[in-house]
Length: 453
Image 1 (cartoon, rainbow, N blue to C red):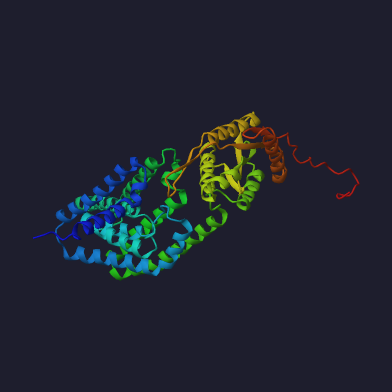
Image 2: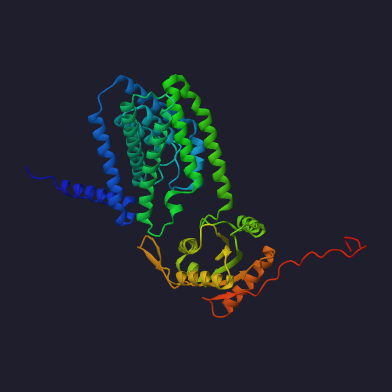
């Protein structure tokens, strides 16, 4: 029988389409060094799911409890969907604490490891589908789900073993220690897996970037604690588990308010403080007089010839350059120092705790930043392939605040004059501003004179 002449071309076209679809996965855009850890975590989670399914004896009570955990997780996601979507739009697609941990940990407390891991998959899948997370790369959501599966499996294994060996009941007073231990295991494993992925993908990442801010970690502890409370309430009376939903929704809104406040003080392109927020916090630092704070100093930085970057490569490339410079600033100063973007290509930094030769120390920091910016090579993805922007430079003006105190406006004015001096000296340089005089001392009034004379 003769072959259909259309069969081969049609099959070839289908293969080409499949190849393009496969090659278009966002997974291939991540650094190669990250692929092995990501696949390792995901395969480990899959292996634990299979092992848990094979090792767990079917049990009607456990099955009913697992269904209830999933139903509560689905109900919570549906009720809080609008709030969660808004929160997601504010924070973007970055990793953040997921309030679904309430149900992950509830399952870990009440269920054997296999059921706990399966419940975590169901709840996380529903959150992904219904809470507006589908725009995030699939590999990231699979990785997040894998970390939850591994954390739930490990916490459930530990608590199940301890409860079995000791004969403790969940409502026993000593069971609190077991629950705390389970929370520590869940939190440690989940944080370690996420921090490890960030450390591999961003070798120069700070500890705060890897483990998240304290506020996020406290929120995770709160959600795990609520999960433990729901589990205990369920064991006492299953209907009591429904009472966790109102406080959980209030917690959702509290988190949303905090993130709205952060969004209002953050520059969208760099993630630094915006000008208004920087001014408020810098004024507070100048007024504060605490032991160990030392002398304060200000750096005002301006990217040289930044307009040429926008004109040559476009504004998107310019945004990438601004973000890269912001990263340099984060890495070259301490976490407690204030970094802000004043708009355009101008940045400002306030450093506290300068010792002895404050001017020399401030100038050394500025020079280090100048060198790092000069060494920058910003890689920008484009439809025609990656674009490299090099040859950047920055001019820096410095000013040291006197220990007797000074107005922030005066301090910035001195640093700004020093910046213009650096620009006039040919750019790509650092200049120190002149000495600032503090406010005049308050002199006692002469005897018999009016206080306002």
